[in-house]
Picture 1 (cartoon, rainbow, N blue to C red):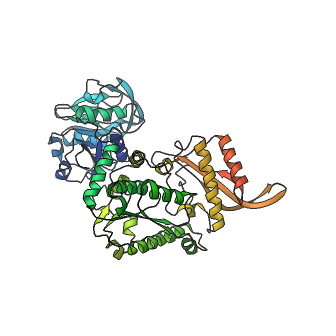
Picture 2: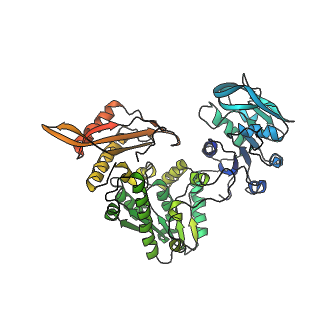
Amino acid sequence: MQNVQRIIIVDFGAQYTQLIARRVREANVFCEVVSYLTPLCDIMGKNPVGIILSGGPASVLDADAPRIDPAIFEQNVPVLGICYGMQLSAYTLGGTVERAAQREYGRVPVEFDLSSPLFAGMKPRSIAWMSHTYHVTTAPEGFTSIAHSENCAFCAMADSKRRLYAVQFHPEVTHSEEGQLVLRNFLYNVCGCTGDWTMSAFIDRTVQAIRDQVGPSGKVMLGLSGGVDSSVAAALISRAIGDRLTCVYVDHGFMRKNETESVREVFTHQFPVNLIVVDAGKRFLDKLAGISDPEEKRKRIGGEFVYCFSDEARRLQGVEFLAQGTIYPDVIESGSVKGSAVIKSHHNVGGLPADVRARFTGGLVEPLRMLFKDEVRKVGEELGMPHDMVWRQPFPGPGLAIRIMGEITPEKLETVRESDAILREEIALAGLDRDINQYFTVLTNTRTVGVMGDERTHDFVLAIRAVTTDDFMTVDWARIPYDLLAKISARIVNEVPRVNRVVYDITTKPPATVEWE
């Protein structure tokens, strides 16, 4: 992003690095994550107003521990070290780091020096989240302790003249009671940030950037899945270049109820584009005939999707640019923390045949590549996109095909599609659609005996899956009220054919995954 204040987060392999970035963005300050092997000249070339050194799993005392150019502390740019970042700062600048006699993990009461700008407005004593075996025992020259706990004399240290700060705890996690205030104080009190990172400003900048990249007559093609990322990308590009955008939506027949109609409505009337809807349901069903193995399903669907998209790409004339809804976690996770500068191609580009990729001589248009998912949703809201589309839940590429155990048939698709619609409707009516992060139905391959009316039935067991999570790396099952579950179950059994029993999946991840296949 040009002409916006920027914080650089140097990643040392911490599980919380992306969370630090999200917390900075939540404070209306733009940030980027880079590997610790990024040359200092490249970091400073981004003109950061501040630098954050992340945590990490290593010990600074290990011979092969991640290091950083010591000159980073001499750039007259504020630095905040977090956990490993603090230990590395102390070690690099001549302090002492030792194995703690008493390790600290979890919630720890910490005493703060409120005269430090890092802790302005905080309580003198509050809970911070610790996770360390090693700690600083002697601060480098020029540093003083500005926070301590019962077992740690240096919970935070500072050289205020050089604007160098470090904390042993993790301010980015919600378990640290005033952690967000610590980060905000660093951003505003120390770095002098003005809070110029807003979604409305992002839209204005991005629309202009798309126009500059594509030019006055350039044409763009985008593979539209109906998901949040590709839909918001399409709306942004549409605002920038109007009908010079062509969207290809491949309906493989495994979409949820009314989703294809919703996509058609939005991108025909609200954000008019040249929309190509490929009705490929029969083509995909034929490809999956007799297939029960979940991995084989995924491979066949993915391969057929590439063929469908490629067929349309070959038919289009004069389209120089290919657009995709890449978002920032894709960029971060596709790079190596150990320093690989190469970001791998994403599946919807890398999977295209070489002759198709070669047609897009202008290159890629990725308007969302610096945004997190929650920011993408905010952009969608700012653009006036429909609530259901902006807050669409994560939906697997193979769609309902992997929510049907065993072989897929048109009848099974109808069953899972109708039951899923009932579940979503009732969750929304109960006001829980923003509290439960993902919820759907699964048609099992198990039949059980039931009684409906005066007749014996032998129909399918249908499962409900509903989970809560912050990051989808771990999930817990949602505690849906029993009365609501009873209502959902009754509606499904009464209204959906071929189901006589409903069960609720109460398994966490791990050991299970979110999807069943």
